[in-house]
Length: 309
Image 1 (cartoon, helix red, strand yellow):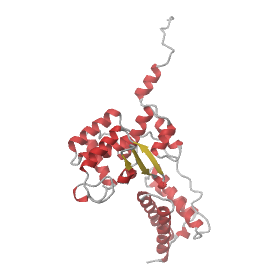
Image 2 (cartoon, one colour):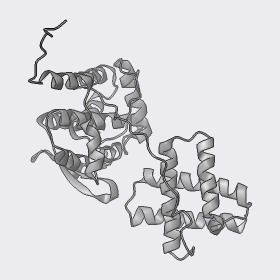
Image 3 (cartoon, helix red, strand yellow):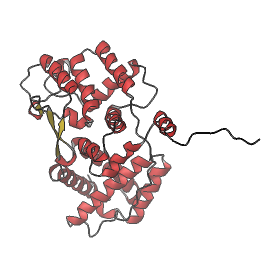
């Protein structure tokens, strides 16, 4: 095994340990960083030779890599993420003294296309829940899972990371450990408390404090994110909502959109969603055409028939 490959892997492992331990990144985020860095290494070794290490990644080669990503059809979002991964990685190596400077510091993220979040209407949420009750083999858990999505707006990782001590039905609150190990408290509605109680009544007593447990033979740990995605995809299709790209994050968008439409302010939404910046929350200021039509109808200036021909 060549020294460059060993040096690269050692640098990547050190960086990922830093992300996990010091930055508090989730396993999913750490996995994405590893994927991005190893993808770049394949390009680096093809361009600079099989013995290439971190020190061989020049600004010119990094710029060439971004052009390569664009040519092979990577989306703007994917390229933007990879730029972030490379800047953070090489910045870490420069701060750690492995490199004299960060060769990726001048990399510019491609401009993101602004897309409105996809969300379900109140009627569609109700249709989805009815479908789950009729189709699920574990209805109490699955209804609780989906309702907590739309009642709390949690991320999938936050929902699957819930522990029994995090849920206080006496005060009707849940404690959530969000991105960067930042804790927040979210109040529960009466409906949320009811579905939690219904699930707890049938939840297997396994000795683990993980709130959501897998089905059948997987009772000792939570379902995987992929399992939840596939489960939800099946329910969405059965509910007749499968003509759009919907995912667990769609339910988080639905929570935020419905609350904003009901008059909840951006500051409150930001706190509930666990956003770092109010700018992230502002995407929920979008409105649908029905709301726009109603707004126009409120115009006090009424149309008058023209008196001239």
